[in-house]
Length: 181
Image (tube, rainbow, N blue to C red; front, top):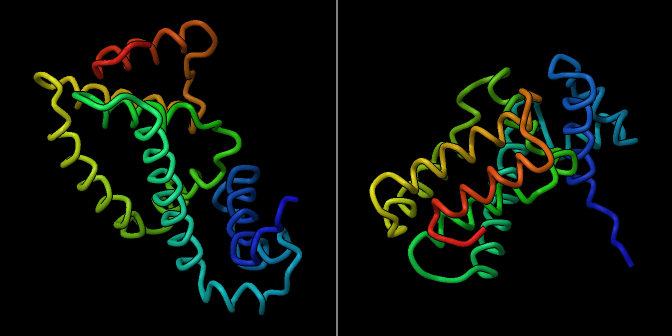
């Protein structure tokens, strides 16, 4: 039996749907309440401002990625490049259309770049893990930056590779990360 999302989760999902479907300009507390089928008072109980709502979207994005990374790391072989391989998998194996919270980055940048601070802090920790990943030279950096670029290309619709070429790109990134495709 599938459980219903909490009201807070329903509001975050509604906000992500609005930004993805209608753009950041359409994101308002009234629109989110209507999209979620809740009163504005119910929304204000969870998110007293639009900034608080967007900050929660960014935090949800960070938590979701870290869970996916931990799962990918646990499923993969240990050794040099394990962190980078998990980064590839956690970022690129997630269905883009289903990961609606990723629009939080766009909303945060449009609203207030300071709202990205939790993501900046996590990137600092991720880069520390990257430095300890055991790959030669700058390979781990190349993998991380290429994966970030591919993710943004997907998110923004900037002609991301599809089909066989995408599979080949991902396989090459995994090879650079010291693993088998």
